[in-house]
Length: 116
Length: 111
Image 1 (cartoon, chains in turn yellow, red):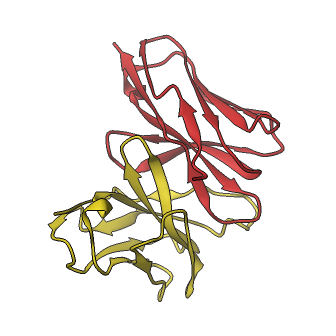
Image 2: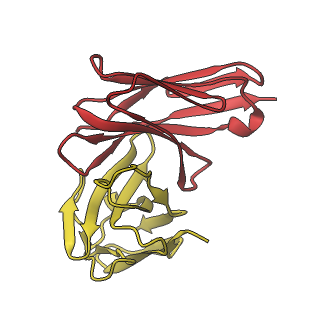
């Protein structure tokens, strides 16, 4: 089954304690992306990656890091989490947006982070 | 912020009625997409319209795009209780690979 898998699904942690949210896709997609969703603000893009070792900032990258060492994985790293990073996070993937026959993003089920 | 806006923020209708939601965006785009989200779950793609298209249909969905006004609308005809969800538009700006999502419309269809 084609899917985007995020872990953990839920996490409560404390300010300053480094955490990593993993994202893995089994569709051989080139493009992967992280979003955060906050009430009244919709989804905002944090980082995206066009392919292995190619990452770029979205609209709200401050306080986050990403890496793309393998095509299937795109972890989101919070080096020193703060309460304003409490949010619902989504990972998504899609085939190369530049390829003919544009295909939409596939989303994971989300990770709810609470930072106290 | 480049974030798009949608209106209404919330919409409540009776089963069988049509639901219309609107999206406005700020930049030139390649495509505009509509997604659906059920109660905090992941988003599911509904329909895509390219910047050179004006209208597109898929089942009970009809999407229009007006690039001169930088706006789009999604019409769901003959709504069902199962259509209850949040709906988001998303654009990819020309020359970038970034996605900008709207703030969403919460649709409630009453049986």
